[in-house]
Length: 274
Image 1 (cartoon, one colour):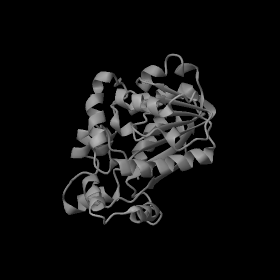
Image 2 (cartoon, helix red, strand yellow):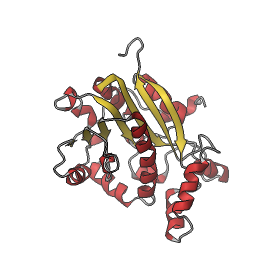
Image 3 (tube, helix red, strand yellow):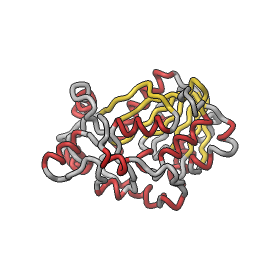
Image 4 (cartoon, one colour):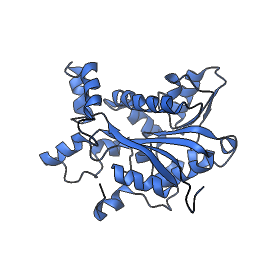
């Protein structure tokens, strides 16, 4: 699983790069995200994995970094405190509308790197931190992960997930001659202003450098085709819920080839961290 030198530079950002609102056009991103074919289905499948993780951890104080249009509190009611940090105005407003008058939920409209250095977030600590479908989209994922460290206790657990460079559909495209590099950004990735294509090794290297140790890892959902092709199959009735469930289960027979990968992490207790 070790990364070849020629790919490492493409997959890992320059650590000194500091993110800012100018690095991403959030309005264009929100519009592109909402228009992306198959993404709502992929997001629901992703949420299954996140939900299972939270239930296993029995998390009560939760930080969700970036919530999109479907905050995790809509499917995980067993929390005491839910904090969302979301830089997209449209997404943050929607989360507040969904939260209504639930006093357990706080939505902070800001970049995590900025919010983490000031109250109220800087004074808070969490059982679980979710960084779901985000690290590949930002220019400096190392900076974000490091900004989360002060919000952790020794028992805090983090769940991170990203698209998989070694997904079956990318391997198929490589063998068909449609792409010549598993780690190159696709047209869809460019449309969504994504910056990085990870495999498990490069994601693990990033999280280790940020000060975390891995307590669990894997991939999920075997996706044979592109988002657009998958949506077409759903539109014509070929791809149904039963088949989606089968493709989720299929990963255990094709380990590591799922469309997305995840790591479960804990704060490292080693020199330089803690």
